[in-house]
Picture (cartoon, rainbow, N blue to C red):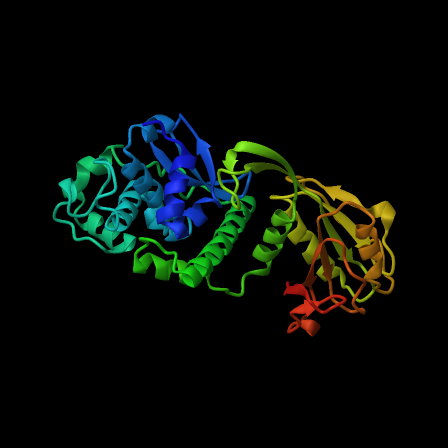
Length: 389
């Protein structure tokens, strides 16, 4: 069988609406350097992706290929990839990989190739089904000698070699936070759609509940919100692609592929009400932000200090100095940004001025002062998001 994503997505659209909608939000990457397939964080796109060896997928039956895709999607939905690692599991990744597979494959027992680790089958014939990944991990630890051969081998269904490898740097952590936020937003959208239409397909109740719980709105760390805003405000240069499925009219119109170009404005309030300590804190946070995206820094008080505007390139270490002490006028940076081709506008300020005129691009406010700590919206129509440092 020649594996083709369009064919299998058509089957998913027909039989598994929830998983089909979720699949459309993931990039698919051919990779002959890996043995089978898997899911991983792409640090360049800041998204999770499904990657696969076409030779492996071509050896599967249609039912097995669909089962393998469902298996990978469940890994992402259940948070197995990065956000449920303890230090102990990171040190014994192979055991955690198998435990995560056993938890998922309890629901896919008759849909997977023989290579899969399935409770109640082959070497796991005496292992009970429908337990959590954590339960299976503890079970494997307690019975490590009985499963030593498979723990020492590479003979498992998918490639988990990229799990937990986002790194320890601030930039790597920020990349994972953005990807996790994107994934949660996608889960929220597709879960709400499935709940309204009854389009869950064969997704087990346990996984439905987990998806709905994960997709609930929570108050998030302001740094995650800022990073997510900047990354998702990037301009997309689009072109048609017959290889990418059109989400709205599959198999009728070509899809589109995008190349991303950062074009973010970060206006820094340097008016007299802003303390040197607050500006130092802002500079430190912008340095961290620059590890994942580049942006234009716009110092202002009642006017923009245009000679001091500069581009903070991704990955660069730079300094931001105080250049103004006057009153505050938010129309000044708004005019500066509106007159140029920006796609997102971040304003770091103490909010000590009247709301400005309308922004032509997305705008978000970062409040650095405790005086307005309860304010959640600002702007000309009081409808632009405020997050608090």
